[in-house]
Image (cartoon, rainbow, N blue to C red; front, side, top):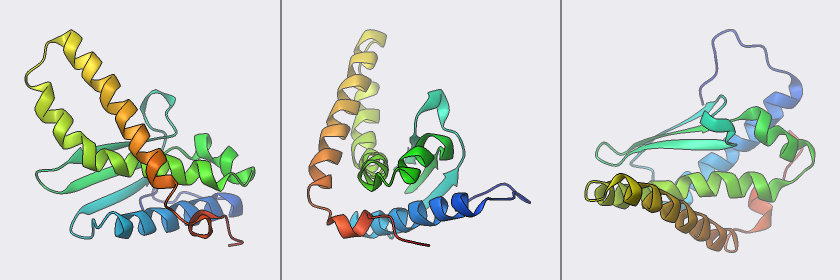
Length: 144
């Protein structure tokens, strides 16, 4: 988990980050990615997303950036499903992005946009399917 040096965190922010880190660790094991170098950063992702990921399947590395502001509302509302879904979706990109990158090499600009949208929809579908298999007690918000 990466934070800015000297960053002062509120108790609630510490609890939020502890919860997200717990889910991140669980997903890493569930996806059998213990051989990957995975990092979790708490910062605002691009374009106002709740989270995003940068995957390098050649070197088995990935960085997930979680926007505290975007998901903190879910944490405060005890919407544990939405937080887990968001992280599961980003983990699914580890599986889908390598194929998408290969396909990008052979398409036009218009085709690349279509491919990006299709890949995002399929990643969403995979994440939703997986969410149906994850026991709720895994992602319930606990008292920290």
